[in-house]
Image 1 (cartoon, rainbow, N blue to C red):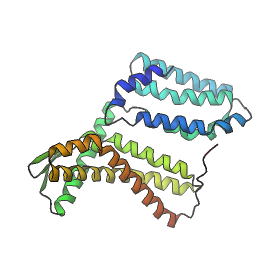
Image 2: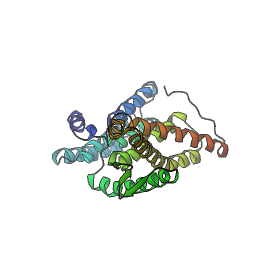
Image 3: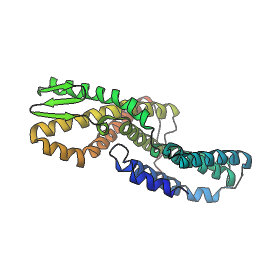
Image 4: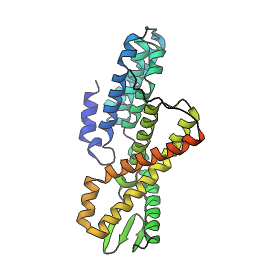
Length: 266
C-alpha cells in the first residue's frame, strides 16, 4: 500500500541533501520492529477492536487524502496510525507498549511541509552563520559575513539549508533518541534532559560543520571546499553530533545515577 509513497519519496524528497536521511530512518525502524519479533510472537493476544478500528479508519482517511492530493506528509504519516491500529486489532495494548519507539521513530522519515521548513531554516542558517563567523574571526581568520554568505580570503561561501536547516537538526534529534533507546536508561528525567539537550547539540554540530567547510576552502581552495560539502559534510555532522551526545550523556551520568541496559531487545 505504501510502496508508491516510498517510490515518490525516493524520486523527490529522499534524493535531496536536506532529507536524505529518510531511507536510514525507515531501515532502522524496520530493524527495531524485527528485533521485537519473538516478544510479539509470544504475546497473548488481547485485541482492542473498537479502538483499533477507529484509529485504522482515521489512518486510511489520511492516506487517501494524502494520496489523492499529493500531500506526502499525510500519505506517509498515515502509516504510523495504520500500524498502530493493526497492533491494537490483533495483539492489543501490550504490543503497542512494546514497539512504541519504532512507531514513533517513523515520524523522522515523514517530510515536513515546505512552508514550515522555510520559516524555521532561515533563522537557523543566520544563527549558525553568525556563530561560525565570530568564532573563526576571533581565532584570526579573515572572515566576514553578509547575511548567510561568509567571505573568507578571496572566497565566498553560502550557508545552505543542508548545512544549518531544520532537517539536519531533526536528523540529529533522531540520532539522539535512537541512542537513548539503545541505552535503555530507567531514569525518565535523564532521558528527557538528554533529548532536550540534543537540540543545542545539533546546533553546535552544524556550526562545526560550517567552520570546517570554511577552513577547508580557505586553506585548500574552493574545489576542495565543494568536494568536502558533497562527500564528507554529512559524515562530519553526524560524527560531531554523536560525539557531543556521548560526552553530554557521560556528564549527565554524574547527576543521574542510572545504569543502562545494553541488551538488545529480543
